[in-house]
Image (tube, rainbow, N blue to C red; front, top):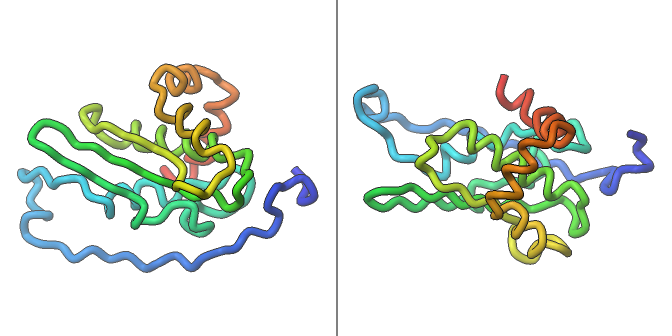
Amino acid sequence: MGVDRLENANPTLYTEKPRTRPSSGKEMDENVEDPIDSWEIFDLIRDINDPEHPYTLEQLNVVQEELIKVHQDEDETFVEVNFTPTIPHCSMATLIGLAIRVKLLRSLSAKVKVRVGITPGSHSTEESINRQLCDKERVAAAMENQTLMTAVNKCLVLAEE
């Protein structure tokens, strides 16, 4: 794809934040189940590749730890991830959201409920895209579409290595 065809040919790059998590005795104990937190979710999605650029979603500031919420009650864990496309009319926003959702579905327990959506006010069609990303049937159909999953897997391939 030529640079003249890119919607955002020169995206702003952000410096990746160094991340070291202090560990305690509990975190090192394999017999103790650690609760999921925004730090862990961010680590799972930060290295997903942008579909148009050779950069990660973290480098483009599309995903940020501050936009991740984790809620836990006695029976369930809920993860909510908002992402911010680099431009308000990004045609790749649905694919990016699907890549985030697929990565989390592959990485987390089936008991964890996941919601992926666009950061409010950051995209011209956020309502429509959010409906698609929250519709389990649409997501399941997308995951059965070989062409679409090839594109998603390209975003995830380096992130999972």
